[in-house]
Image 1 (cartoon, rainbow, N blue to C red):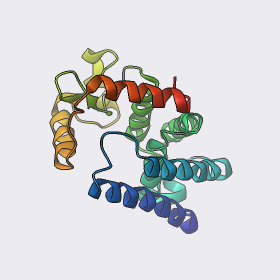
Image 2: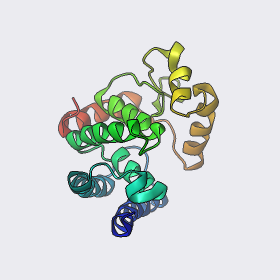
Image 3: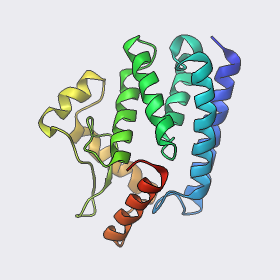
Length: 196
């Protein structure tokens, strides 16, 4: 394993998580994509891209499970760099097929990209606010979602949904007061960075 590369990935992960914690404490995590968080995500995505260009996807044999998880988190959060996030998914999917990353990581990233593109999700892993003020997601072929989730090691959608809602609630996340404005801002952001 590449100890230096593992340290690099963990440093990027820690920067992401420290920024998230700071924004959460300051009441800036929910309600929009904070500029400070975007800057960290953008910088981390560029560094991960350089790693992938040099080594291929950082999988289990190269960086171990912890390094592999850190690389996934960085890719998952690279929302403001659409081309890089799509490239990460292609590399990660290839690594998953080779047994170098858990299949669930590619599933999460697949859904994140589809969410950013405004498309229904395959696995139902990215939640957003619905008209009723509850977190949910649009699913592609909802009747088959649990079979798809099981194939990548995820629990049934309806079993997992309450936990995700509880996690967001525990952090102080709540439905936006003006859902139409919230969605308009999401759409404007998605267009501005190149998702749509």
